[in-house]
Image (cartoon, rainbow, N blue to C red):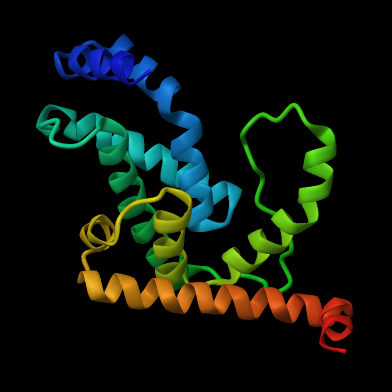
Length: 193
C-alpha cells in the first residue's frame, strides 16, 4: 500500500489529477476518521476532510517526501481541525447533552466482539468528545495515531514538554470522566464497597 501511495504522490505531483483522485480514495477513511476524532462531529469532520484535501492538492508540489505522505496529510488534517474548531467556537454553541457516539469506521467481522465492546467504545467516545479541543488533539495524536511527543509538539506548534503536560492532563481528565460515568451508573459505587 505504501508503495502504491508513493507512486500516486509522484504522479499527482506531476499534474495527474486522476492520481490525486486515487490518492484521496486511498487515504480518505483514515483522514476522515482523524478529523472526526479531532472535531467530534460528523459535519465538522466532513468540512475538515474537504479542507484537508484542498490544502493537500494546493501544496502537493511543495511536498518534499521527508515524511510519509500520510504523516504529512495528518499534519494538514490536524491544522485544519484546529482552525475549524477555533472558528466554530466563535460562531456556534454546542448543546451539552449531545450524546452521539463516535463511529468506528473499521470493518469488523466479529459481531459478538462489537457488542461486548460497544458500550465501552461509546463511553470513551463521549469522554473524548468532552475534552477541550487542545487536549483532545494531543490524546488522539499520541494514543490513537501513536505519534511521538516531538511530532505532536511540531504538529501543534507547542514545546515537547507542553505536549507531554497536555497529554497527562487529557488522560487524567478522561480517566476521571470515565470513573464519573461509572459512578453515575452505580458501577463505581459497587466497586468502592
